[in-house]
Image 1 (cartoon, rainbow, N blue to C red):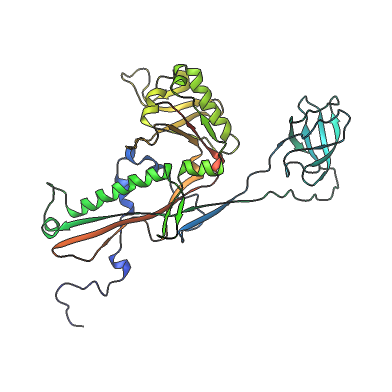
Image 2 (image 1 turned 180 degrees about the vertical axis):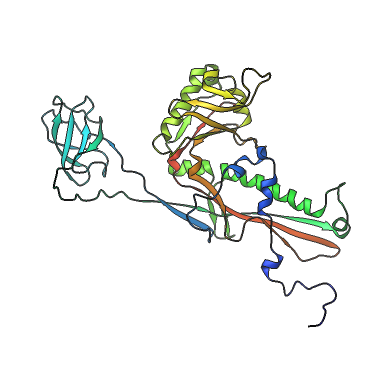
Length: 383
């Protein structure tokens, strides 16, 4: 085959020849500016992202408490509960004052027939809670029917983060602004987009606009508001910071909300303004990066929770002040972000216009929160 001379035309090049993957470059950026990008991954995604809409299902563990509907006499053998799918035959439950009962039949999911198992016969008042403490199947019993618990279908959209770098021929051929070349300019443009991605992971709104084919992802706050709206703790404004116990109570409230949904120790996401306040909370509830033998004031890096012991505090140093009124607490193993297949950060040269060079920097991502009830947030910080 003969030699080929001159510049090779891009007309015969495939998309992959022109597509330069730069996704791994973000790992070189300082941690403190893109903390969530460094901490999150896509391990919680079961499938590749192949569409602008990513869907997953959630089925929670069967509940173990339900409230009584109507008053129940001490000698009654039937009652009605407010939630279907909690009780099943052979479940052992406890009344509020300690009487232990065993379920003999369930009708329609809420009609419970039972008999006393131990303790004094006890009347129950409308709205009081019954707690399942075990199950006791008799020897040789036939298998019971399964308690059917429905699935919740959750979803999020992908979002395109895009910008363009344009240089004159002279700028492309030489160093620009001192010692920054075109490759470094592309890297800086990508970093700007990564910072915007992190902001979206926190406060993005899930929107679908078919007319313009524009889709945006819901962030952490949106998915909590949508699927776990009760997991919000009102801090109460600036006056709450006046006493340590008031602050501690609010954190404890948030931990209580997620206690049955997390798989491991949760973490705390906090902004710089709230961190300044948290540093003043009594030392027994937090630990600094410096010990008492060293001089100076360290950044608070753990908090002593009443349920989980020491949990990590992650300082999110975003520039927009998105966390000035929000503190998030939750299970990091339940949350992640992932690129659309073959759409992780990349750059593509665009057509030349005169004596200029242009590149598009683009990435398409979505985020997934497996169990929204494993996260809560505190708002109304008064900062």
